[in-house]
Length: 91
Image (cartoon, rainbow, N blue to C red; front, side):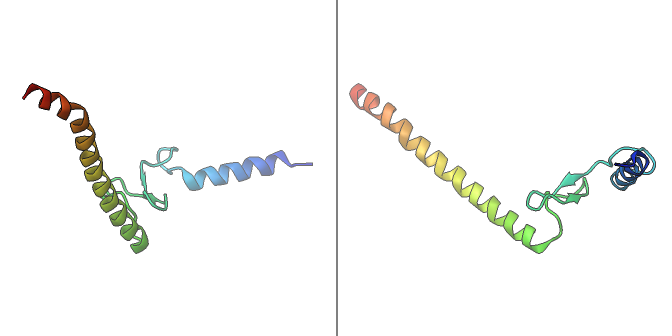
């Protein structure tokens, strides 16, 4: 059988590890975008100090910027496909 007292002690010990001593709640924090480890609230960009995470975050930011540019180009071509023929008829 399971000893209820030991279970309660284990739960109390685990929650004490996670919770703050003064407030009894989890301290405010952010998580690394790459490895999801807890980091300080003031960390900007939201990445831990691990070099692999920093490198991956830089690559992701470059990819997002490039994707945003290609999206605008595609939208411009797509919009011109609809608006272009109308403008040519008016001329």
